Image 1 (cartoon, rainbow over the protein chains, first blue to last red):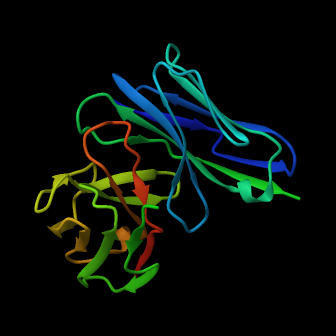
Image 2 (cartoon, each protein chain N blue to C red; image 1 turned 45 degrees about the vertical axis):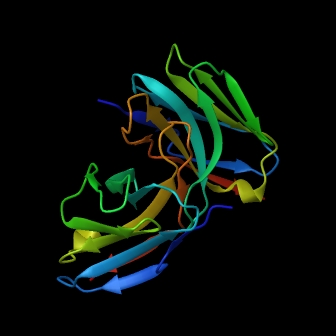
Length: 113
Length: 114
């Protein structure tokens, strides 16, 4: 069964610190992996997308990595800001036509002053 | 910018009522999706549509139906609302074909069924 597991479930860090969120998946065959950011009360917004051949992708202070062999991805946030407080969702697209996306349950990040 | 709008941000209904959740996108996207999001469960796909008047069941279609009469509008219908349908409902749209296309989400509707 296609699954995406994220850890930790929640995380609290001090403003200015770095953090890393983890995503493990069992989706196969796999087309691409995205990280979405979802602010409280809003819809998710795409941060990064990586195909199976890409190892890393950056978007400002966000850097996503992908190891297609171990089926693991991470999202690293550098110099965190209060506005980074949100849920971060890992989403995998199966490589089989119109098969729906497979969503992780998300990591809830709280950045405090 | 792609804009996906949902008819209500917050909605309170009573058990047994018929509920309509409307979603409109302005980018001429063929694909539209309805999800529900619950704490600890993440996003789960209810229904999706790849064309006008076309619909496909997602992972949890029971208790829901959908309507896509026009390309830009995708409606989710709760025929007889129940308390276990209290949730955040998210609509999304995307271009067809490539798996690289991004799904754009609306702001969500938080539905409470009393």
